[in-house]
Image: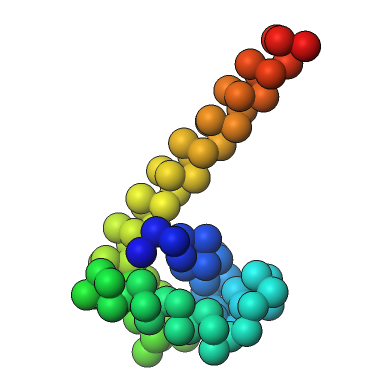
Length: 89
């Protein structure tokens, strides 16, 4: 389910499957299938596709909050490793 976090996050940011697909350089059908697979694994929908623009379901809101935490940790790790690398030069 987290394998698709960047894709799901891009859809959230763009509020559109088609705009996210263009941004990610993937096809819209592939992106839709990837999200469906993640939703099947979770057994919950992440997006309410009946709204324009699309919106998050409660499960989607939780998913995005957790992805943002993961992205913050990854950013902190990159920064720390860059600082460590610079101090060893």
